[in-house]
Amino acid sequence: MSIWIRCSTQRRRLVINFLLMRSIFIILFGIGWACCYAQSMPDWVRNRPRSGNDTYYYRVTMGEGNSYNMAYSDAFAKAILESSWKLGVQVTTGDDIETIKNSIHENITVGKVESNIPINKVCEYVEQRSSKQYRVYCLWQIGASGKFVIFDEYDNCK
Image 1 (cartoon, rainbow, N blue to C red):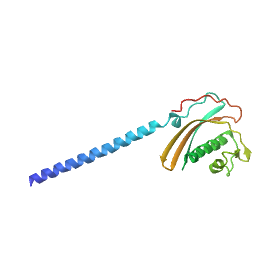
Image 2 (image 1 turned 135 degrees about the vertical axis):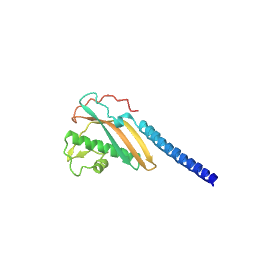
Image 3 (image 1 turned 45 degrees about the vertical axis):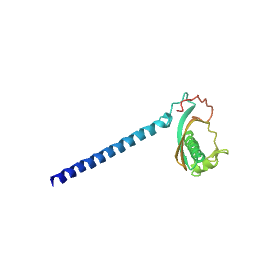
Image 4 (image 1 turned 90 degrees about the horizontal axis):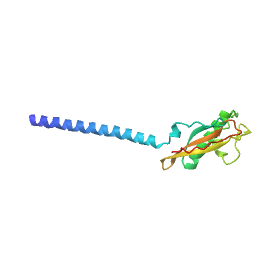
C-alpha cells in the first residue's frame, strides 16, 4: 500500500511539473512572439515623425482588404477624407470611404467641391494576415493649407 501511494505522489509531481513547464513555455513563447512581431513594424507606424516645416504634416493611415490593392485604396481614401476634414473642406454624408475609394483614379470631389490636396506617400508597410486578408500602413506627407507645399525628404522607412 505504501509503494502505491509513493508512486501516486510521484506521478502527481510529474504531472504538475509537466503542466507548469508547459504553461511557462506557452507564456514565454507568446511574449517572445509578441515582442518580435511588434519590433518588425516600422517606428513611423506607431510614432508619426515631425514635419520639417509648417507647410505640411505627416499622417499615418491603415487600410484593410481582401487584396493589396483594396487595402491600399482603403488607406488612401482614409488619408484623403481625414485631410479634407483637417483642411476644413465640408464633408457631406455622401463623402464616405467607399465613395472616395471608387473615385481614386478620377478627380476627387469632396462636399461637392473639387479638392486639390497636396499629398505624398512616403512609406508603406504591408502585412499579409492570411491568404485573403491584407493590412497596409501608409505614411503620408499632406499639405497643411492645401496650397503651396515644400515636402522634405524622408528616408527612415525601416
